[in-house]
Amino acid sequence: MATTTLPLLLLVIVSSFQNAVVSGVGINYGTLGNNLPPPKRVAQLLQATLIDKVKIYDTNPEILQAFSNTGIDLIVAVENSHVSNISTDVAAADEWFATRVLPFIPATSITAIAVGNEYLTTTTAATKSDKDPQVDPTALVQAMQNLHAVLIARGLDRKIKVTTPHSMAVLASSFPPSSSTFATTLVPTMTSIAAFLADTGAPFMVNAYPYFAYRDNPDMVNLQYALLGNSTSNGVRDPKGYTYTNMLDAQIDAVRAAIDALGLGHRTVEIMVSESGWPSKGDTGDIAATPENAKTYNTRLIERAQSNKGTPMKPNDKVEVFVFALFNENKKEGGATERNFGIFNGDGSKVYEVDLSCKFCSNDGNGNGGGFGFGEKVSGVARGPSVWCVAKPHADEKVLQAVLDFCCGGGGVDCREIYENGDCFEPQKLLAHASYAMNAYYQMHGRNYWNCDFKGTGLVTFSDPTYGRCQRA
Image (cartoon, rainbow, N blue to C red; front, side, top):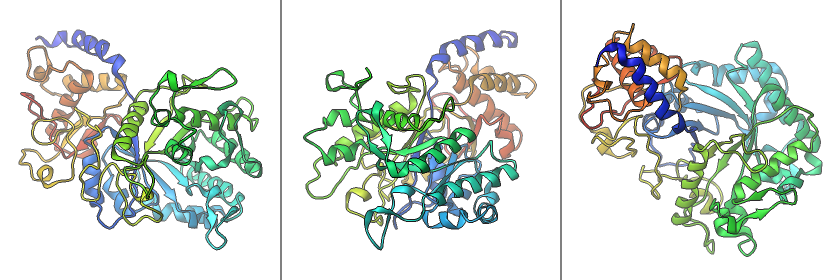
């Protein structure tokens, strides 16, 4: 095929691909276990999956270093025990940021700082009272403001957002969703937090678990409704006319209604599900915590995260989702339930089968796109090049088009393999063709990480993306 026909081919590719764009999926990476793989191995293998966002619960330097130049975005956290200190003044917040975060950027893509975790509903260990907050709630607001001031001073406030994850316990009630409000004692604090998030463009994080609602009320909650079954026969009607076919959407809209009730005027706040999952094993008598239910819930949760769908109250507002969790954590406090939310065991084996594959991110070494595992079979595969460059699975199509035009034009890449009748023409998708061209350019120019940036659309992978007859040099 003549080079002059490439633009026409690319128009066909874009046309066939434009309806297939999906959102990325986030996952929570907890480390309360003594049998977990090293962070570098975790980072390498997540690049071969649909996961493009990872949330951690601290600023573990080994994890931050491991995720450098991977193309995966990280959300880091201020531990609850450090919130009070950061709230004292901007200087304390700057010291925390300068020592824990700054050394790792921009190589590690840190997009948000979560200040505390369920801070407002964390109880005082000494009293074990569910009414006594750990500290004055205003400390949380001040800590968030101080960190944001640090980011402004360093010119990073557009790249890194500041927020805080909440449990559903911040609500006075969650049903019906349209009538939901925050607990009366928390209204002043939640008003300050919501206003801050609206003004800074940061998301409202909520940890939403239909599992707990079902476990505590199995006679009142339909299991399929809790498992994201999306069955209209099990739907729940809200007095304002909304119909909910699954509990997660109802929980999200309950938070949305509570925020609206604060009276922010025309200001809006995006909602992010910072945690949601289902355990594969529970305490004695917990019949809902099974591998089958966990597989069903998390499979549907991942599909929902990719779908770009909103909720009945806001159908056009997509909701980012972070699955909980990557690993079972055998040293986590609490009962068996708390230790068994992971998709993977500590040794890297899957607790149950959930498809995290991303065909054009990488491959398992046997020609099977998107392979994922922690076993020696993956790490011991014989290869030519040990590192490749591919397009991010959710990269902007217009940018990918420009990258493809550059690589096959001024970039000097021989793109005949992705023309019709070439070994890499199929699948006829922009993402696949861009990955071929980006990798060829990357290999030509010495495999430097900056040669795989392509305006933020490329990522370096340690897994061979070769498939079928299409060989990647």
